[in-house]
Amino acid sequence: MKSLITGAAGFVGRYLAQELEISGYEVIAAKLPFENIDFKCSAVYDLDITKPADIVNTLESVKPDVIFHLAAQSSVAVSWKSPHTTMEVNVCGVVNLLEAVRDVCPSACVLLVGSSEEYGLAGEENTAINEDIYVKPCNIYAVSRATQNMLGRVYADSYNMNVMMTRSFNHIGVGQASSFVISDFCRQVAEIEREIKLPEMYVGNIKTSRDFSDVRDVVKAYRIITEKGTKGCTYNVGSGKLITIENVLETIIGFASKDVAVKIDPGKYRPSDTPPLKADTTLLKALGWKPEYSIEQSLHDMYIHWYNSI
Ligand code: GDD
Image (cartoon, rainbow, N blue to C red; front, side, top):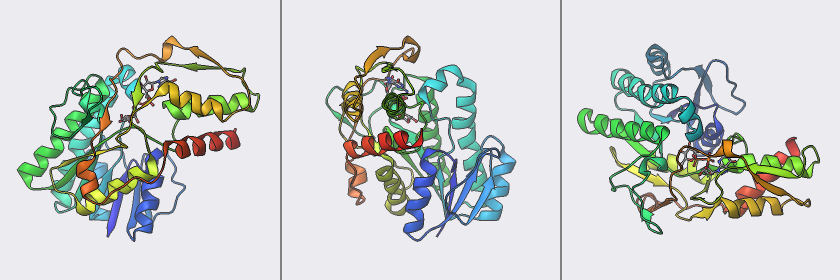
């Protein structure tokens, strides 16, 4: 089975490549020209998802059986500052990919990785959200992901293409950029513990909650969805558990021996923050997926990694 991962140089790519390799897949990585791939794979291609010709050329030489589409502008915070880029990459990029697949390898399975942010204001407090609800995205990133999801459905239904979608809730792990909350907190606390930063850390809105999963569980879900999922369907990928950002912060501070003062940085607040949402993963579990990593383990792994690498 030949797999192609777009956006392979990002945080999730290396974990997905490893998951696929141990499951017997041939892994081909596609990345932006200035990026590096430092994990095992059988070939590496330069691919800018905003350039249709790049995609056609890559697909013609690879002829993949399955494509995992990770290439994206994946930050909610960045989407407020760069709305055009967010739409160009997350919406036009998906059209470019689906058109190229239709042209070059129409029977390939395509997994479009989307986001729980698509649900936005659609959730009800304390109720796990399922894939059938009418989405109400409430930021620019979320709109781009919801559009991607609708495009995937249209290509599956109208062209009978084997396209599946996820709505992935927050996922974390070693190697995640420190622009995301948990990596940011782990890095700051590790710097304090190493005494290269004053014992005060800066946070945004810690009163909200998120449904966090370990990236290793998430990539396993991606493989299983493409193996056993139904074309045109969307699958939630999440833990089904909510935790407050404040609780996460306390746990991470607890890994250090120093006293840490927590200070609010207004610059880390967003024009609007998506309300807490937890995943109903009934559909995904019916395919045989179950999570293996606890949040405590993920946080500890990330803290230790930052501590050892600064
Ligand atoms: N980044 C950051 N830094 N976020 C903070 C901070 C901080 O210092 N303090 C509080 N937060 C809050 C944010 O306001 C948000 O409510 C929450 O922590 C999580 O922020 P992020 O880690 O930046 O992730 P996100 O929820 O906006 O988006 C992530 O999850 C989505 C799925 O729900 C990304 O991974 C997206 O790509 C993904 O689709």
